[in-house]
Image (cartoon, rainbow, N blue to C red; front, top):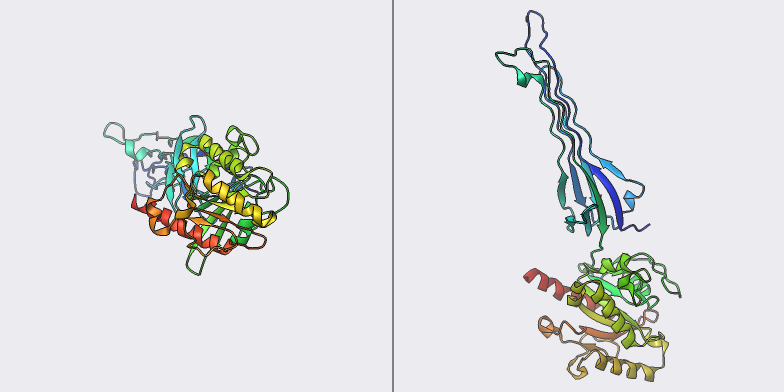
Length: 371
């Protein structure tokens, strides 16, 4: 089960109490105080583990607590420190204060370990309180309590390419063909109810991560359809692939404009994402209609088709427009990197699409590293 937000109460351990003890040995008269200190309570850590991609491990869990410190003992023996609690979360998890909505931690890097709460300090034993005027102190300190925080964990998937489109436009089919993901595929809307991640293996040494989120409809940024619950999962994607259905009752222009508006209304940050467009189900309509629809759509998005080149060897049956690679760094970020007609069922242009996406991801990564 995919779970992307949970509420928890997390507590560090209480410090162990100091000990009240007096030295008692044969031939030692009136031994002085020798009570040891209590152990420190356990700390709370968050650790990022890429082997998980959901918060489902916390289902049914509402309280997480580190171990308490062990009380001190006689002969100045310190109590054992309480065992720390390490909470493993998938990359992209935010730790948010449940009361103020403040983002406390943003955990993105695999293997990252961050201390969240300190354990309570152990109490001092009566050995510390001896003096010339008080040689038999009969008291010690209690351990300090741990820290308790009410938090909310929210997961925002991290992917190189995020698939964006209306329901039932072929997103799940494409990711199942390109990657190792196995989403449910069916001929009805909202087949995908939870986000899916898949690794697209280009060759033995090169791959990228693709995310399929449930379909977006008009008004999604206001909560319609599956709404805000899953729009947040494309916030961390480096590159967006708009998937527009050529056989849909909605025009390509209507699909594109609606998606752009919903992304902008959800987050202004999404306006800065580089993107490309895949025109799906190209074999679902008449060939002569395909060419005209593509030409009209190219004009709608404001591209000059004469300046684009077919550098990825897309199938020559249909025109594909790609911004030249050598000008990628300076290309117009408000316009798509490429527009490619594809068919996941007949595999038309699927392989070239994979290489085109890889090149786009590499360019975006290099730009991010240079900033």
